[in-house]
Length: 374
Image (cartoon, rainbow, N blue to C red; front, side, top):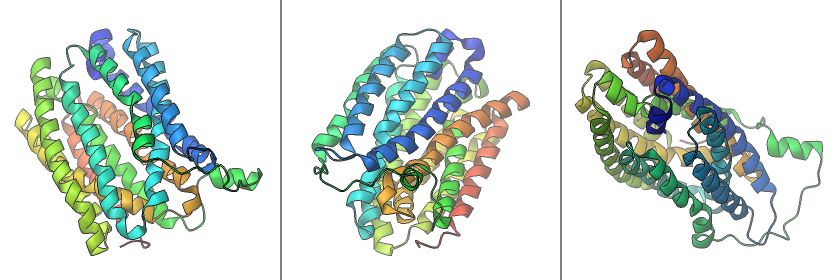
C-alpha cells in the first residue's frame, strides 16, 4: 500500500498512510465486535464460526481486487475500508475457536500454533510484498487470491459440528447488551489485558507501518534498496519469531504462567525500538528486526492464551475477543497516526523510535496487575 501511494499521490503519501490506518482500523474495530457477536448467535449446519469466515473471505478478496484497479486516493480509502470490514468477518470468528475448543491447560500450546500462523502471515507477507514495491498492483491481485482461500480452508481443515438445534436466547434488550456491548461484570483483568495489548500494538505499528519511508526518507536508501532491506528484515523476523513463538506457548503451559513471558517480550521489543534512534543506518533496522522478531514471537504466542484466560463470559467469547482485538485495530489507528504527527512536527522519524519504546514498555507494566492468570 505505501508503494502504491507513492505511485498515485507521492506528495501526500505519509498523510494517506495515516488516513488509511485510521479509517480502516475504525471499520475493523467495529466489525470485530459485530461479526464476533453475530457468530456467537449463529445457528447453522456448519456451526457458528465457519459461515462468517467464508463470507469474509469472498468479500475481502473482491474488495482487494477493486482496490488494485483504482488510482484515485479517495477510492483507495473507500475500498480499503470495505476490505477491512470483510477481513474482520474472518478474524473475529477465527479468534474464538481457541476459547471454543481448547481446555485452559493447553491454551498456551495452541495459542503458539495461532501465534505461528500470525507470524508467518505478518512476516511472510512482508517478504512477499517487498518484491512488489515497484509493481504493487500485481501484489494486490496475488493477495486477493490468497485471502479468498482463508475461510474455506479453515472450514475444511477444522470443520465445526452443526449447532442448528442449540437453544436460542430470546430476543430482548438484555440479550442485545450481553452480545453487543462491552462486558462489565468480572472484567477487571480483561481491561488490563486490553490496555496492555493496545499500547503494545501502538508501539510496534508506529514503526512497522512506516518501514518503507523510514528507510527511504530517514536512512536515505533508494526504493529498490529499501525493498531489499525490508525483505531481509522480514526473513529475520520470520525466523526468530517462528522459533521463539513455537517454544514459548508450550513453556507457558508447562510453567503454568503467562504474565512473565508477555511482560518480558514487550520489554524486548521496547529495547529493540531504540536502536534506529541512536544509529540512523540500515543495519540498526536489522538489529530492530532481530530483537523485535524474538519479542513479538513470544508475545503473539502467549498473549492470546492470556486473553482467553481473562474472558469474563465464555458464552460471549467471539464478541469479547473481538473487543480485545480492538487493541490490534486501535493500535493500527494510533500507531501510524502518532508517527505521522511526530514526523511532521519534528521533521524526522527519529523521535518516533523513542515514543515507540515508551509505549511498548508501558504495555508490559499494564499486564502485571492481572490476577486471574499467573
